[in-house]
Image 1: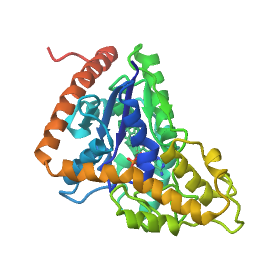
Image 2: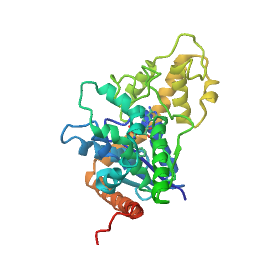
Image 3: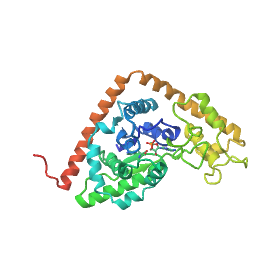
Image 4: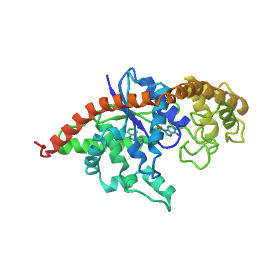
Length: 329
Ligand code: AMP
Ligand code: TRP
């Protein structure tokens, strides 16, 4: 059974891009693989400095992960800061990646440019080293993520191979897994930009907890083009292609097949909105139920952290030993 690991940051509200690009694949994969999923609060620290916010968003994100269908009896769901091995191996990873490699990461360039006059933490720069630790600690064979994470998985592979070359075989070199449709959901108002928690306005973002009427409205107002032809073509027709891809992801078809059923934009927008509402409504019900029992959520996270630690501590010990650090006794 392959080992799978993927994580999500507790920053902002989960949106349709997170769901179609990542969470849905985590849920469908949990029975065929040994699944570990982390809520990476330490990664969120790279851009969050308001006190008292992260704990609440961590609990809400845990409710979301169980609401979308991760089964705590099957998948291991844990909080990154509950498993100290992440920070410990993170340092080792920082010493295994070069300054030059980190400088080439597009996410750092984008995020630091967006923050302009704001505080740009060193953590934002070394972020990929901690992400490599997240993955390598679990001997993950596969990492299911959206397309935006490709560069992070590539650097993790480079780090793993470099470490194995220096210190002997220690880490599994992981593979990226992206979904067939939905790997890059774009903003409904700006269809060339990815749907993102950090977008300026929220009329182009569909949140998992949006009211059905708000979802339908956002799709009705989605930016398209003026040539009037329904065709899947990401470059020439980004708005229409995004709708086709979302509808395809919700109905288990390909965007190309989906396109053949439409000649007009209006019905495509309406059907896509409805398909999304159908997918999200049961998730919203489960989310509300789960948030009603926060003690139970905390208990599930404690169980997850125990399972995660038992794997992570063995990997960290192997890494320390292969490096040749002096054992404490
Ligand atoms: P983040 O919200 O950055 O922690 O992302 C969590 C997961 O959602 C990662 O696997 C991302 O690749 C995925 N993701 C984020 N935004 C999108 C998007 N617009 N389309 C597809 N996947 C996405
Ligand atoms: N960088 C990822 C994101 O922004 C979150 C993340 C942190 C992650 N550690 C990970 C994803 C390990 C996959 C595996 O979405």
